[in-house]
Length: 199
Image (cartoon, rainbow, N blue to C red; front, side, top):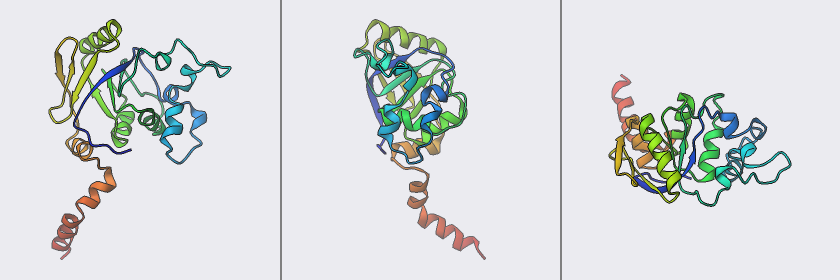
């Protein structure tokens, strides 16, 4: 669902694992679905970690821990590596995460998140480590992600960092526009340019 981005303040779900690939985010057997039913993909986010082979809930996995909830997923370094499947971003969005924080994202996955109204925030390794420590100490720790100012703040420590985002994608997120919406919004300008330059 397209929601305008501005400032998000939320508790976090910590996933302090490095090199989480897209097959772990959404296993390949779920890729047969071609329609983007977010609830379906959200229900199967991290499927093989959330459930044991016999289908019972894995109580040790963070998404099954009632202490942790929120719209922000805090993940270890190199998040979203592996195949380029967009379904991984669908699953993250479908579960209800609006922001993913990591010290490094695989490029294709990072762009897939942006295209699906999930904001990938790249932070330094020390900031990420401190964030994990704050959440572990107090699961109610809140993080503020300010897209207009491009800042992320750990409210437990007061520390902030700035993050980079492509200007076009920032505009699209803040206005809840996908690429097609953006073109339609600028249809008059495009037509005016074409008529002016078609001679």
